[in-house]
Image (cartoon, rainbow, N blue to C red; front, side, top):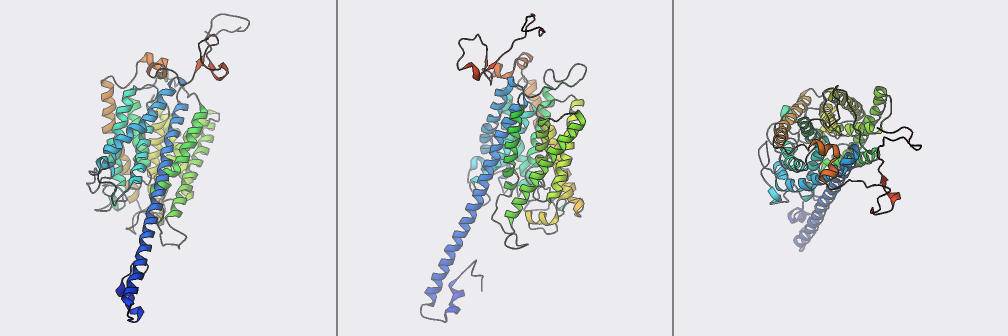
Length: 511
């Protein structure tokens, strides 16, 4: 007889009633009640999982505010309005391009292993494979990649270029990569549902160290390289000149907002939470894995922040909050790949090494006279790549089998006794992401440069983009003798002009 908790028919129940006159009617009535309860439970499961995914999407979208504050604090005051506006448009332009094309290219299955081909403009959506909450969540990821790139080319890029590259990145470049590694049809993903897996395992990039962070970082790398450094960043002698951002407070605020949003970024990538594992008891299920993922995320970021704090103190002789914030974000970017399949102690190793990866790439960038105002290519690209390698080394067998079910003997981390197949798949992911983004975004930035659409003029760059491109400064400056100024003077900054005259108030003139 079928399990009465999952199915019920009158035929199953009739023998239990002893053949009474009303046995058939009673059995049918009882089974209809079971069916109603089963439907209610199924609906409740969908509601719980979709609510969980929606709130995760809201957290990831809140990271845009973090990006905006981090970018604003990391640039000079004269470019604040420009970088804030680009962050707004990354989300707005990305919303339309991802709706029209990006989501279909990423998850429009059934399709081939390279690119999706259904759901353009969300036609015939929702489907059995996804609801609107899934679209919103994936859109938030797509605009995060675009936000990474905007930091690399800050303070010297024409506004129209932001619109062009952001739409292209979120509408085509990023979706193709996410299809490869996250779609059930993708040729290299661990979640592939048909055909053979890459090296028998597929690449594990749970929340996007490669798909999001490397894509955004490598795109920014080519943009910043093709544009060249900001004026004054490197002296003619080759000496590096720090062009520091104007507000450490905004940098810290942005970093905390990003850290907060990462709890939607990493744990939310499970997509559903109401799922038992049946491995340890009823108390243990996907909800436990979600909690573990939040813990590994926390430990990697915290360790990277502390390592950067003391590492930079040894190298440069002082404690720098901006460097610590970048180290924190580097650790979070690195753990994003393996956050669900590693032990908490391994996350500490991930964060420790990611801090030195970031420090090393920053030293290399200075030697090569590469200028990235937010260290985005080094942070997201370099630490993202390390995160993929880390997963290939430390992924635990039990966790891999829980998260990626259906293949009990799937390869796991090399240092956890799982052989080198997973590590090989991770290396392939690094290479193909670097290659794909290079052959798509590199030519785009080069074409924009040749068309005169990429970099602003030297005069505009020296004056600041807020004044030359956006009609005014983000902050209000006020001269004491400006009688037409609006608002109380005590709430405004005063501009102090240099002078060459010696007065009792100014015994050492500025020249």
